Length: 202
Image (cartoon, rainbow, N blue to C red; front, side, top):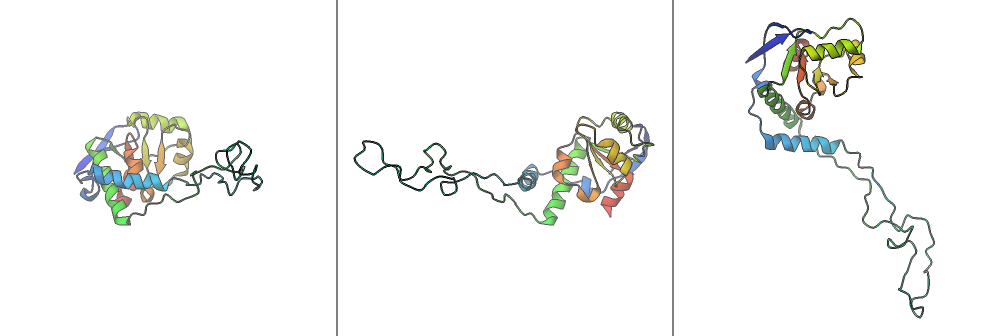
């Protein structure tokens, strides 16, 4: 399977072959949902915490005697039904992590890239060379490539490109080794440099 090879101005330079094992899968929505749900779950901090009746400050003394006052019985001022009392059944620190096999993550990435390819969401450029670390140069290149509002740029670490692209709203930059199914599907277009694509095939 092949696709166009473009330059930074959006002009066709030739054709480039895409590996079947990465771009030729039949996307499985159920499988992708499982992997992406796990990915998003693993991003959660799980640090929300509230104080229970055992942790809030206050006396442990019984507010008034059990009987004879005409009021409802109470055993503690730290009860959840009292003002300044503890919280009942509130969140406590926990881990939301869902572990997935590495092979499953690789397969999910292939399904995501295949889905993007079927939607014409894959762009291959020969190079993303910019003369200076200027945001306007990267913005112009993205416009020439019709990258959309949330482009994902997959390239080897290039200091100028990283510096110039970090101020562009919606743009994400990553290296081939850090690519995953979520960032692929969450982008409008996935832009690979030819060098980065070759690195993924190895």
